[in-house]
Amino acid sequence: MSHGESSASEVWQSAVGFIRAKSEAVYKQWFKKMVPISMDDARIVVGTSDDFFADIVTKNYGDLISEALAAAGHPGLKIAFESGYFDPEVPEDTPPEDPDSSQVSMTNPSDDDGIDPDLAGLISRHSFDNFVVGEENRYAYTAAFSAAQNPGKINPLYIYGGSGMGKTHLLLAVAHEVRIHNPKARVRYTSCENFLNEFLDSLRTKTMYEFRETFRNVDYLLVDDVHTLGNKTSLQEEFFNTFNTLYGLGKQIILTSDRQPSEIPGLEARLVSRFVSGVTTQITQSSFETRLAILKQEQQCLRMKLGDDVLSFIAERISSNIRPLKGALMCLSMYATAMKQEIDLEAAKRILSDQLEKEAESRAISIEEIQKAVAEFFGIQVYDLTGPKKPKNIAEPRMIAMYLSRKLTSKPHQEIGRAFGGRSHGTVIHAVKQIEENSLKDEELKGVLNQLQRKLRG
Image (cartoon, rainbow, N blue to C red; front, side, top):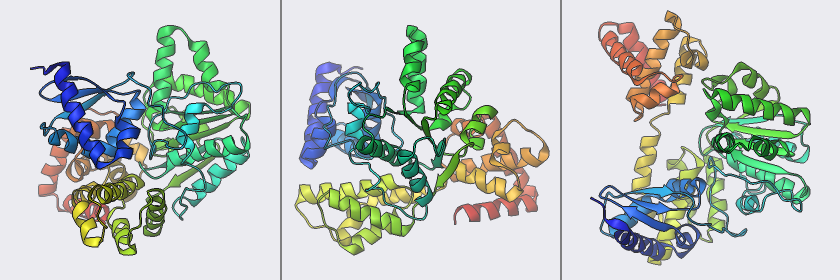
């Protein structure tokens, strides 16, 4: 049953009114120009400017939206975004928060300014100066800074690590550095998914020449999430040619991914070879000291002051990545503003209880961690687990890794299958069942499973 456009408008206005009461700044920056489109029993559809904008809102304010819709009398109502409805007109001094791992479609830079105006707004908060450096990211930081100052010397620079570790911040910091010291340089920042979308659009509209000019007529190509190239043959061909063109001209290429090139399922050997031909560096999980430094820096941006005991508590309890760490601080800031109340340790525990519970659940290990642990245990490589090989010394560890992925994560069979080289959900179901049955009668296998689980759970 459809509620119609007028009902969608009423519900959305009530919801954004709730959000505005919580935080005028959040309302103005993210929700003010959204357009209610339609609503049914399951969801409300809201128009935004583009997928990037919607992605940031979903990641950072999903819980707030759910709370607002519940306050509007529709608990459990889901939200869906439809792009192309407005221009958020984000001013340069209030850029989107935390665009790590987000997708940004950049247009060609103008002749007067080597960096697109949209990018100028996006990078204004993400410089090298406000990137908190710790032992886990020091080499990546140094390499990115060097690439910004001496284009082509470190080429390509490949930075990998888990979500929310600061990879995108470093890409934007490179753009920021170039903007300050070499404003005529042409910079192109994009996600690999956006590269794919623009490639498909160029095929559909027969504008391949314009597409290639967009990505090849640059001095810096900064590409996020190149692991999405996997298993896309035509896209890999185009990316390979773009890479070679820029590399041959000595232009700077910086790539980010959630894994090493050799561990990307379905990535052609020639691209793996290109990606590792320069400098490859990893960003690992941030230390307590780094997390605490990030919180102290962020609270200055939010113009709030929390006690050291509160900041230490947050840094200790939220360790998965930087994004929820900043989200916790934002939550406390909003609460303090709305309730006009000082935040002490007990208040912080109460306000953040739901997020801390989710954080504890999120520590329940990733598929990537399981794959690495299993590969290390059996003396093989991760790409053996995700590749097509089927000898017993690989097939059994692969089934064990699938079994542990199902047991220790909340991922469905289909997603687990994709993480293991695009295998079907039926293959995963079979592997899980086989390991379960075998472990009941094989004490050695049972011991292996217990040992791996203890290691993964720390």
